[in-house]
Length: 547
Image (cartoon, rainbow, N blue to C red; front, side, top):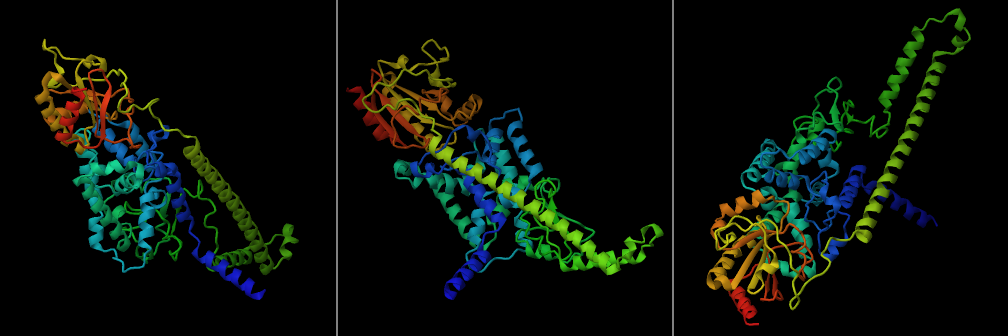
């Protein structure tokens, strides 16, 4: 029996010593809440419901199968790319609101990418210590913010440069989450040099995070740079009382980030500096609002101070005749009474703090359970009513905007403004789906141009843009810049958002390029997911013509 008690005692002690901190629990909670669509990792598809219009506070790729919200950094790039002369007030307002309330507390508590880096850093290896060199490198993220997040999307319509070329969250969560699913095996034939580059970059970030604390956050994350601008004025975070500070440097030595002082733009407000401050000069901003009672401990020095001050006040008190009865108490008894009152207040605060935290965690747990149940059992992906496969009649869709290209004019020289699929009955029709930032899409388009030049009026080729977040002006700009406007092809837009989803595919996640070929009667003769070679295209066109 004694051995059993000893075992449970040791087990309890181990769990107590290894229990995750409140910050770690909040990090895990946030990562799970913002990626509540767990079935996406199994099915291999991306959630595209209503909550994708909202932004996650931290960095969390839109294309991750589990993501139920959008990434604020991706949304910012997208909105800047399509803003033209109008400022993207919606996303700027969201970032401003999050910054004013939390600032880089989001980095320290709510960002899944930050959590992943901290867990990697726990691997026992030699670590690279911060220095003036890492401090200098920490300014790189501001350069990336200015160039890749702001300048490139504004100058080159529809190019989310940071997401496309740098962001490891997209590679790990988006591409990785989809490729591991067997139903998306055909996605592998779309991987090119860009994926190779980003995969190598992801591996480099992972390895670096083992040796360097929050490597990506410190040197590369533009979202952290944005929130850093709000650190001094945010409602929640850490603050330094200069009157109590003795400039011992313990906070800076303890901090693994490249801060110069508590609460500057590099501080992620993790709070690890609070317990090491010998003068208790560091505390939480906004504690009276949301963090009341988190630190209610009273040190021995504070107890002695209370006793001394109380005794001095008792000795200095002049007792009047009207208060003789009260004056019967000795200074020691008065101090004891004051201590009892202090203890009572302390117990009251502790009790209130317990119930406040209990209520907060209960509410948070209820929200998480509700989200997991909803997204995994009740949320239904938006799909077309029917999938069409080879041998079936393709429905008579009306396409959207017809872009200004050489192929958009009729024999009388008039611009074609709208087209229906039935307008092309009588000839073989090739429909290709693409979007402006899809490199494999743009790489295969010259083959469609060559096919049109070869077959002339015997074949109609329609190039359909499927990314409805890009406005018509942005698409036309890309078409003009790449010289597609000189081609004898019809470039149009899928404004109905259902043509693209209406032919059978083994790929459950939205992806391009995709191509299908219809015979003279509008019956599907061929479909393919991924980049198409001219040889295959030519063979399938001839097969459709010979039906």
